[in-house]
Image 1 (cartoon, rainbow, N blue to C red):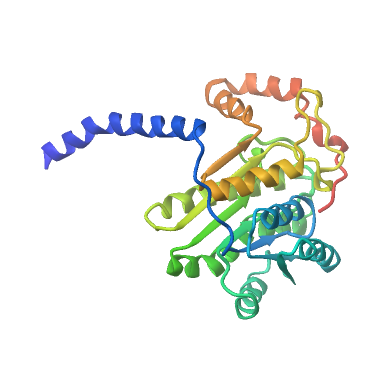
Image 2 (image 1 turned 90 degrees about the vertical axis):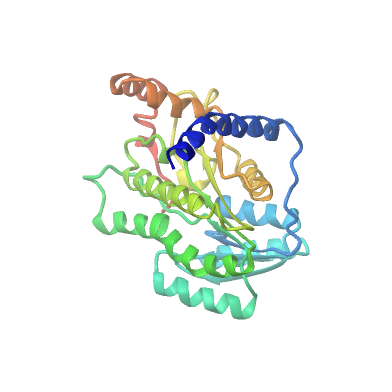
Length: 302
């Protein structure tokens, strides 16, 4: 037994080296991409913002069916009509992912009317943009129910069938704020950090499940109405991301089975700095970049 443990310990560095080598090769080589022609894609928060662009991108890349969930029927209907005009079958259902019973009920209706979901995109999110002491208790709960717990309910509703079919993908549209929080959005940052932990655990838990994967996308501030009014100090140096680009990279992550995507890639340096620098230095970086006060002008939607 001891010899076996010793052998594993000696092989471990070589296994890590091989993983790094594969990652480098994968980065530069043309990867095989998943054919979406048989996939039924469900996008929560699919009526507007990044969700709307995701719906268009999945349709563009050949998804068989696109399903939209959201709370505002007007937006859902408009996006559904837009997707249908491209020739892709599209349906929408009014559903609040923060309501567990509603999620399970609508999941049952969806399966009966449309079929099995093979790609679940957890995109629905809200932000209230206030400090802890200025936040209403109900608003804080709403953010956690939609941004975090909603993913529990949707994933529990659709993952079992994916595992039975050995075919599925769970996607989370997260945020770089899950790794580096800012003042003035305590509800959002907390919920996204919880969401990130959920996806990290889920991704590891599905390693031995053939045909089923996960992708977590962590974008920087994206140019949608959700974060309207948010201002960084150097917008030329740190411009808001284009939602079409975020959608394109998300769909590509699904097709290449990429577990984690940070947008833009330069945000990796922020994560590294957080691990190396003292808290006082990080505070100075926040003040210098303007992230310390960027939510002072926030007037986005919830």
